[in-house]
Amino acid sequence: MTTGVMRKITFTNYKGRLSREEIKMMVQDADICTAEDDEHRKKVEAWVDYAGQVVLNGISAAAGAYFMIKKFM
Image 1 (cartoon, rainbow, N blue to C red):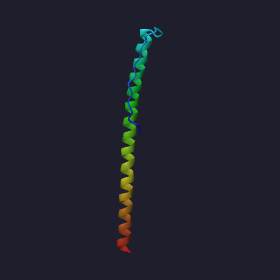
Image 2 (cartoon, rainbow, N blue to C red):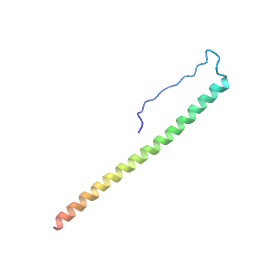
Image 3 (tube, one colour):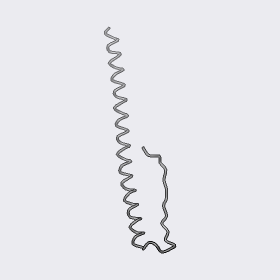
Image 4 (cartoon, helix red, strand yellow):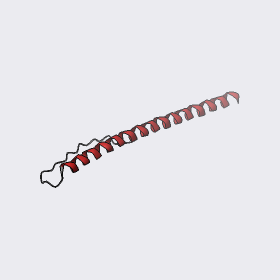
């Protein structure tokens, strides 16, 4: 899981070291990374939900089997 920490990055060019095109590409790359992060977050959350259901179902099945065995003994 993620920490949920969000940061806003501001690109400044007050010394003229980066061209407008370079800054634009950096912003586009950041947007692409944000989209990839969101996609990955959705996959992780889905996996965690699935794993939780498997564990809960496994515990329920084990408890049910235990009481079935206890009932017939």
